Length: 128
Image (cartoon, rainbow, N blue to C red):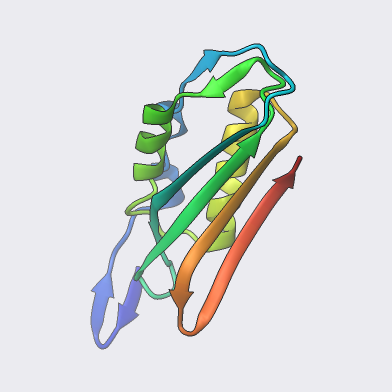
């Protein structure tokens, strides 16, 4: 819960992030470099209660023989919408969930957040 100007803003805890939405499909090409992007990621800043909007770039090699199914990825991202989570923690959570799901160590998650209070923030978790 955040407070501003005598008003309280409530939001969900991180346990509302639903990684069970994520699904995969089999794909055997460990050398293929896959990039998935969206401009539709949002969560809630737990300090201010205001929305954090970001572009998300997912880059990976399907070492585990799996690709993430995009509709399931969309539903997973929607589960962040009312969750109070810091930008850096959101990036790490996406990385953890997807690297486990895809069984790959060659994965990189980049979040590019909209300017907030005059600051631009980009978070990068993982490497290729």
